[in-house]
Length: 95
Image (cartoon, rainbow, N blue to C red; front, side):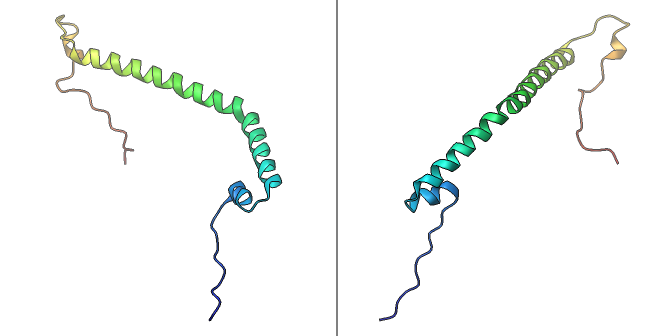
């Protein structure tokens, strides 16, 4: 009877160490990850807050432009400002 090669278990990082029964390195990795996450918290919060405010500004601009497109200009001075077709914005770079 031939011996089969040992099975290779696939695991990564701290999970592998926990599966193998060596718990001290696993907890060390968890502590290190917690310290890194805590040290980066202020930076990531600043980025998330900035993008949230930008999103709110874009939503306001979108609502304003939609309102302007729906409006009927009655004044003779304002009629030329109204485009004959709806506004279209292309995000593709110009050649």
